[in-house]
Image (tube, rainbow, N blue to C red; front, side, top):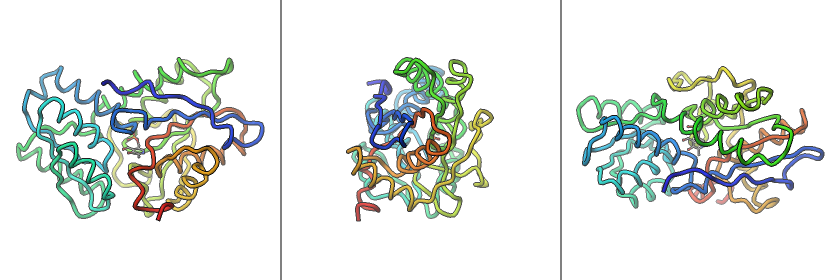
Length: 286
Ligand SMILES: Cc1ncc(COP(=O)(O)O)c(C=O)c1O
């Protein structure tokens, strides 16, 4: 099953008065996150170019969602999969990865340490690393997929004024910003980020010393740093007000978009990366 064609729904309960807020629910992808898109495009391209041959092991460094998407593809197509995971990854994510048959290599530290470790394994010939931070098919997944779906499914006559999305590898922001401005030149693109010293799973600050090589943020007009506790609070508010069970990065994006709509008015799209299931062992649920 190819990822994509996720629903675009309106969230009237959360939109400030006089504004309209629309959300693309990315947990409707095969393993429950936006990263199924990047995983599928990177995998398919590696097979098509012969970089990945039948039975060859795969290695990836990920805080979870890309690994889960790739582990599913590896399982279906018969590749052993090893995943370097920061020790901070949630238990739910580790269990899901094991369920998809992946071997977990827990690396002390954060995502950057996991990346270093996986690259070392690849250099030692342990397998092929599709390397989501440097693989342009990560952003092409959004240029050819997500942004075209948004243009196709947008329900209003006037174009949307704003797009709010998380910055992690930059795949989502790079591909969607380039795809959307072709159709809607006036759209303002917003990058939602954590603070460097207050990480949120899957997200990255532009102040982080490591910036993914694929990230091209020239079309991003505004940055919105959000504290993790604020994002978690928004997760609970979203559940209470709309019944949508979102993950922490979605909480951050919704917080930034609602704050933004209150200031600038108009219409906005939020890309919500995943649902709340993988975060049940943390706030706001414990
Ligand atoms: C939960 C979550 N939110 C946001 C992102 C950021 O998306 P991107 O890597 O396309 O920038 C990720 C990426 O892994 C993620 O897992």
